[in-house]
Length: 156
Length: 184
Image (cartoon, rainbow over all chains, first blue to last red; front, side, top):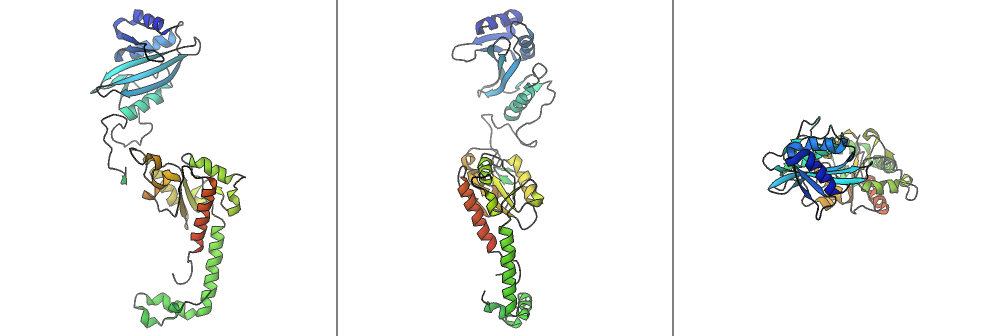
């Protein structure tokens, strides 16, 4: 199924929760959805027989300075098509529902986005830092991150 | 081995604090230094010929370390074989990048090794942080910030020849060690 057809299907099902299609210059094309609707849209993308996106290839955080985004790369082994899904978050309260009960593999990706960007995935079964030590302060891939001078007495 | 005249100094002349070992040394006579020297030579030879190193590869230098251990370069002929536990190791070969999360583990592994123990920093990352020196929040800028290092091997990563050269340099350091008798 083509990106425009997938977008139209989602738009017909979810209405205003599906904001726009970023097609030009994006590969795969991205469907922008409202953060609160991410879980419902994800479940529909996976379980609808015409779409059946059974693989979450990647989940990444993005810092646009004035806002954050979470980008989902989806692929269907059954239908042989791919689509991206994107949700923009306000910088002050970057949080959205988890999708780790739709694709269990999302958990590690969400932990990485939480670790490096401080994006909170509500309802996650296990949201801890995954790369940095537990007692690390701050989220290093944020563009306003300030490096600490020392960590455990060692110069950074 | 020639007799060092300094060890024959009478007890009174060396000062109060330093006199005690000089008395013992002088009492043994010049022949003792021949024996002690030979014992040093033997022990150092035994140590340098069985440098068991800890399997500790944290990045791509570990691949070169495996190369050096395999049949083409054959580190075994220097008596250097890998051990999977710090309790049996003489040499901590830090092969790769050390992050701040790993730093505590490096220190603990070093402390678990029995004396005498030696450290080789292999590659740019272990020497200085290498390509991560500037603008990295998570890489330790040189393993010598954590533990004392005997030999630094430059390279990114160093070839097995460079690693073997570093191990031979360490063997020279070990041969200079004074284990018995008066300290040089």
